Length: 313
Ligand code: SAM
Image (cartoon, rainbow, N blue to C red; front, side, top):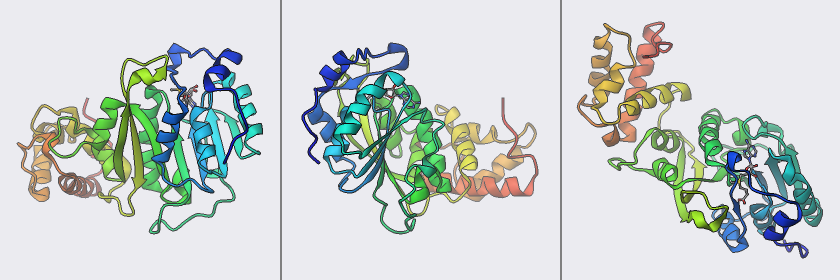
């Protein structure tokens, strides 16, 4: 789509007095070549329904519209951006819808009422989630959306919708880290058991205004047809969290912390039945190892009431 001539993002910021709020970790991307490059990672957006989270002054939003999206819903928490988004809405021939809300609370299940649910086993639907959010929002949000992938709820009610999101570079590297990588962490397992993940590229912090102290990783998530671990999300999360809580120790330590004092027999059962050696380091465990640990833990939880509710302090 060709947008009518609009003020540049820098002019928009000046015209509407949109000073970035440091407490809200606001950093804007003004270079529309860069926003085009980010949005291209989502693939062909012709006719797409897109939810953009945190549009701010609207740089990424322009690129999403230019790349042919038919219905773009932006969810922005800070009302100072609403007048400039309104200008873009008028220029977009009504393709843009604006929600003044917090994405952590916003219900995306009703966001695209005209989009039929697509078969989870088929190709991803033409529904995309795109966002350059503050880092303190993007990490809790991805955990929330990974749970939504597991439950096929939220933005995944339409099928295996892709998510294109930015993170602090180190977090992006953790998301995609493979076995034995020093960055391997809870986020690697939680992301990769549910999604194919790709770190598309890194944006130097200085490309933003004002520049954050860190660089930015652009990550695309495509939900898998079959999760690599077929155990409820909360259960996977608990096992993975405990194992990586003691990332410098043998995995024996984290697994033992899943069970109450005096039940070392259950930790031994975990190792025996899942065929994982207790002296393995958390970073060396493969997805298959985690899957076997989770299945064994699930069986123990089914057999012994109260085990899942037990939290080591
Ligand atoms: N997307 C713009 C860009 O790339 O230039 C702005 C990026 S700025 C890092 C993050 C934006 O997310 C800000 O506009 C901020 O107000 C918005 N935001 C922060 N937390 C949010 C939340 N919980 N829900 C919706 N928007 C949020």
